[in-house]
Image 1: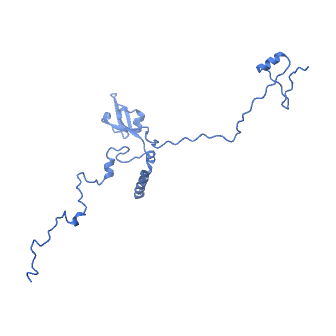
Image 2 (image 1 turned 30 degrees about the vertical axis):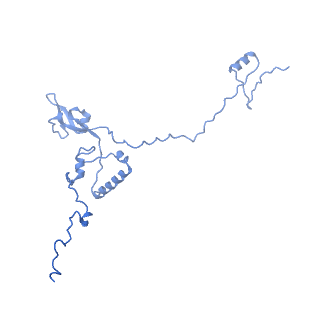
Image 3 (image 1 turned 120 degrees about the horizontal axis):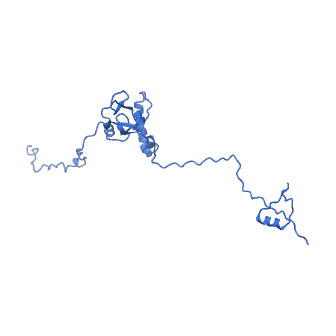
Length: 225
């Protein structure tokens, strides 16, 4: 019995296959490579907006409507879905009416009185004859040559479309009045008589008189034998 049910010798046992040769390991997906870059940010929108993006400041994101409406249709559909989700999530707030004013950065000392008033500053001359810049609250600006302010300017972006321009409508035509007619000038009949009259007729100076029927009142002279 021991010999019958004894342990097999090592040479009788099947050879163990390596994991590379085992069919169970041949069809498994390879392990994902480790990412060498930085991990994904938890605030991707904030990171993008702080990267010197046009139309963005610390409080607002301005998207010109004319440029947004001129983008391709798939882009507009995606933006519409995103804005709809955004407005549904914040519709309970008391939204004011925003007024966007295009502006550019200028030095405070380079502005005139009108621009200073629009930017919220005043200028006056002190007792020594020097210019003193103040805010509307009355606080004096200590370094006006280094102070940068926003000044209203013309908007080069609004109203500009990248798509094909629409043809201008044709001017309105007044169809109520009668249409003009091409009428030949009336015939000129000679007065007849002397050679002087014939000469005037040949030059186009003599004009015959016409009666109510439209026929000339004076028949030209014809020599009869």
